[in-house]
Length: 128
Image (cartoon, rainbow, N blue to C red; front, side, top):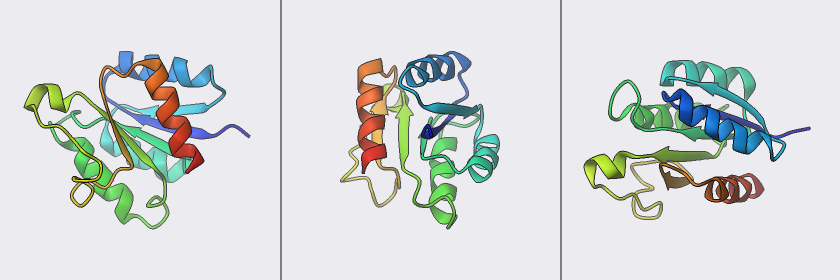
């Protein structure tokens, strides 16, 4: 059975690009264009991995979604890959070790994400 990945991102072009890359590797992809829809889909499909944008309806919506995911007992163990361009906007650079306490995600990647980086990171997170 194919691993399920939920992409939560407000940019349809980004969603389509990630979906295409990941489907060619045999993953089952679902998506949502905002945090509220993303939370509903996460609860409904219980994905194996969530790829989450930060800047959606607000500049920090993805942060709030990540907290809600980790607070929900049914969703807390699902790895979250944060794919974001917020570093380009704010010049803030995330470090998963340093920032783990306030940002409960397993990994960060900067947008635009190169296909090989996306695949490598997704495969590693699903194997852990």
